[in-house]
Image 1 (cartoon, rainbow, N blue to C red):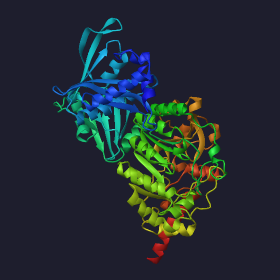
Image 2 (tube, rainbow, N blue to C red; image 1 turned 180 degrees about the horizontal axis):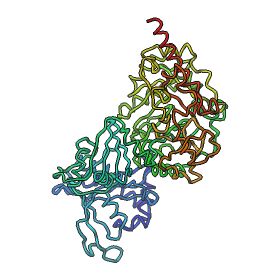
Image 3 (cartoon, rainbow, N blue to C red; image 1 turned 120 degrees about the horizontal axis):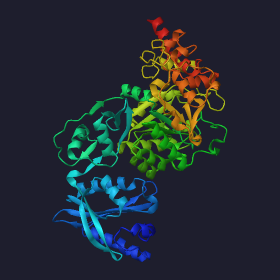
Image 4 (tube, rainbow, N blue to C red; image 1 turned 90 degrees about the vertical axis):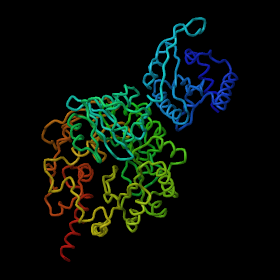
Length: 615
């Protein structure tokens, strides 16, 4: 099934120029070479692998070792890609995986490459993979009537390293010093590298290789299993760098990068299309029958460019949502590109479109979390909310699959009047099925009519939940929201704590998902302007006087003290959170008190008063 693509590669003059053979004229020649690969591998003289697209399984090229010498445990290496697949990082990733397999599953100790000295791209790639240039053989081969010089490169098992693929990392410049933040998704630990260690990591993780003594300054990362290094480390030399380990988010560092103008977190709705019909959905046209008719969403090429812009802004964590992300035809390809930038990937999905292949590919991306919207503890309840029969069983299968593959999952329920009767059972079952189980009691206003869903919990239901110790809004739980009177009124409700921006399917950047206020756009080519240090300025309530980055500066200057009602009532001390965006949608005034948040604070206060009375 790969023969035609295989022949396309081996019949291409530019591909064969440095390959040591003439380009093939017929597919029969290509078939003969493929057959020789099979026989050679059966005789343990070579190992060959196809480099393929993880989603489509399409042939992109090949990689292998040949001339395996079982006496001296050495072999020669080759890697070749279709012309359209070059300079995209495929060879680096494939080589890292392949050489890891070779060194771990065979006795091979030395992998060498003999390269035409004029093959600049191959030489650059080999150096990036850690191959050492050992010398040049003058006029070593006769190629197309001329003698050519051959450079010898070698990768020794003792010099090979492998970085586990489930990490995320980003380099920042803080106070003029290089700092790198690494997140290990399985242990949930953060590592902050400063100075020289940050620079060494950057070289290592980008495909470069430094001497053994330099690697020793990253010994903590080797001990923690982030770097798999096959050589015993030399003595650690004095280093001006440090490595700090955090068991939870390093908030102090977040504050520093925010002050430098970086944007840490992005929520990106890549499409408004959806394959479910959830009764409480707040997205545009969710209930009009025209939800899947949206035009002018970003093309794949535009989406890739947007990721590059976000990387420039310093984005570390990217949450992909919709609509339904799996409805976007390029979703997997885009996620592959996001992970190639080492960005932490969070996926929000309803799980309906998952099949075995999609599950396999998503797992191979190593997202930090896959969040599922689950609205009941059985198919009858969940499917009645989503409007699609069989939706619940799809989620159960996906959760089981990701658990087996060590991919973290989140089970997220929204409390509605039609699933209220089983919220406790749903929450408990979520803990059994997933790594985390969440229950959201806040209904968000519709983007269409700016009204709350008719399926919102009523006062009695909220009160009952506020009195239940199992509930996330239990009145005794110590939750201090953004507008709580016990908090510093000079703090800002949103930006200072999250450093988050929102992007819609058209590439427009907003202040948050609830606040329809565009501050930049990919198509306007002004996203990079958002990398700016915070300006001290008084908050201006009339947003119509501002535009672009002025809106961002103004948003960042918003303080709790600017909110008109928050903190003025007895129930405010029971407020879990407040959202200026919701306030704007509901009241056309972002400084007002949003009903959906206040109703929860009122219920918690009521529960407190009832308990006080009975006591």
